[in-house]
Amino acid sequence: MSLYTPEAFLCDDRMAVARLISEHPFATLITACGDELAVTHLPLLLVPDREPYGTLIGHVARANPHWQHFAAGKTLAIFQGPHHYISPTWYADPAGAVPTWNYAVVHCTGHPRIISDDGEIDAILDLTVRRFEDHQAHPWTPQLTPKMLGRLRQAIVAFRIPVLGVRAKFKLSQNRAEGDQERVAAALESSESQQARALAAWMGSLRTAHRR
Image 1 (cartoon, rainbow, N blue to C red):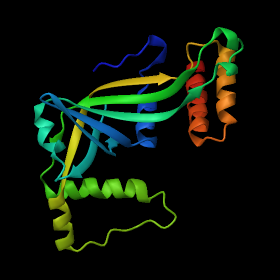
Image 2 (image 1 turned 180 degrees about the horizontal axis):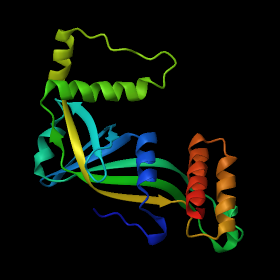
Image 3 (image 1 turned 135 degrees about the vertical axis):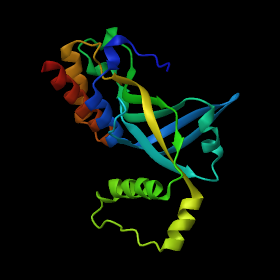
Image 4 (image 1 turned 120 degrees about the vertical axis):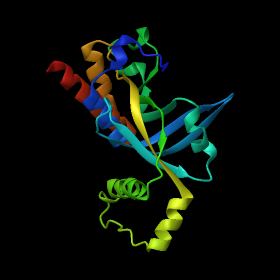
């Protein structure tokens, strides 16, 4: 897996990786298919198991040809965490700096396995619904008849991706002096942008972890 990652931005903290995937489960799934790339945007959940990094689970519409290329080779799942523009005015020496962009991303690779067992398909669907409905004030509860559920299974392709490799890049101003990092985090925290404030929280978590 090729992802330009200067050493200062490389993250090998599995808990941080799992947290980013959990908080930002809407992924970009990419599979090579000859000279083309199959790309699908979809939610994926990371479940712990015997695999070193766990397993991603999800489903696509059967009408989406992406799943037909799963056997062709590796598939890449990209999870994009919070990101935001960084102004040189936030540094101690703005004249000696240039603008940049801070962000956190996780790349996972593996070979998708299509699920054909009805019970396993239902389990993946149930886990996905509960993961997102549990946060609702009035969670929706599936009330599908067996016939409706059968039609639903026929309309999708559920799959698992045992994660073979992970590359996490957290570009959070680690290459700047401590004072500049604090100024950047403070500027982001004071922003009206929810994205900026989320990025500031990640910067704070990373600095706290490094002090332990």
